[in-house]
Length: 139
Image (cartoon, rainbow, N blue to C red; front, side, top):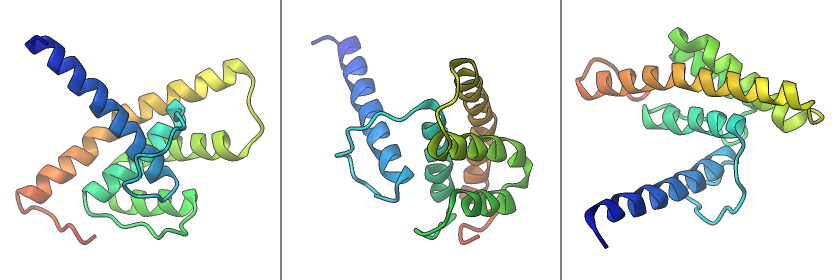
C-alpha cells in the first residue's frame, strides 16, 4: 500500500464512522456505529446541527422535538437563525410529511445543503472563541 492509498483508506473509514455517528445523533443514540441506514442530505444536515451543537457545549434534552432543538440553537447562535430554520423545517418535512414530488425533493436537498454550508462556519467560529476563552461552554 502506498502513501496515497492510506489517505483514501482513512477518508473512507472516517466517512463511514461519521455517517454512523450522525445516524446515532439523529435519533439520540450517542456513539452507536451499528446503524446501517444511510441518511439523506436533509437528515445529515439536521444531524450535524446536533453534533456541532454538542461540540460547542450545547445540550439538548433527549425528549426535545426538532422545533425545540431549533429554538435552543437559535437562542445561542442567532447569527445563523435562517440556516437553522431552513434545515429544521426541511427535516420535519422529510421525516413527517408525505414524500414530496422529485423536483420539490431536490429543491429541499439543495436548500438544506446550502444552509448547512452557511451554518457550519458559525459553529467553528464559536468553538474557536471558546478555545480562546471568549465565550462560555455551558450556555
